[in-house]
Length: 247
Image 1 (cartoon, rainbow, N blue to C red):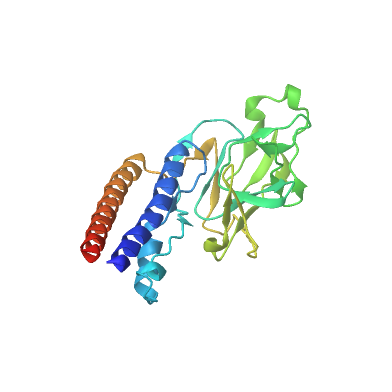
Image 2 (tube, helix red, strand yellow):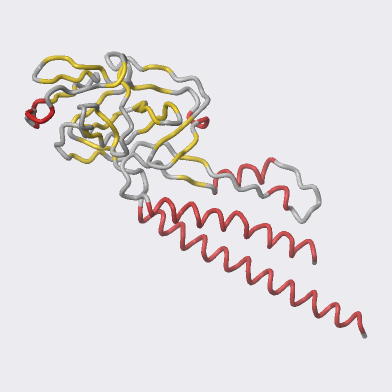
């Protein structure tokens, strides 16, 4: 009976993590380039593989969240510095903590003409940061970004956007603002031959499906309640058995 209490209690912990993950996914549904997290498949996989250590089956339930890198839909904005990647790959940006990677191509211009993220991180080019000249007098149509990542100002090349890929996406660690860090070795993609291209005037939306997330949240909530009821029932039975022992 005590083992059953431990088992029911252990079942609650991954469900709490699952609710936190679902809530965070829904909170970022409108965040460009956001990649949703999940926990359920990882829990089931580990529960089936790991042997129980006779601790109320606690060892078989280990919740680990992972990130789905499924591409999001492309939203047309027509803004010249809104860029979306089709296929694999990430934009590389320079932060105070070092190089970070993102699928959020909602870029802007700093006062000195440097192409940056909305948080002010310079977008890396193949030869350093990309800078636009005479920003104040530049017409909106004066910046063109080709599918291969070449940046043109008034039809003159000013830089080449750096796009990188990874053999092991599981090695990417999610950070705030749709950024990722990793110790994995990056590979610079040649957009003239790789199955990846840049779409100017588009941004990649999050890959969160609101309906699916809400359904999962309802199912998880009901499952959590079932575990709670089972826990309370076993606790009540244990209390009654202790009362009988006193007689």
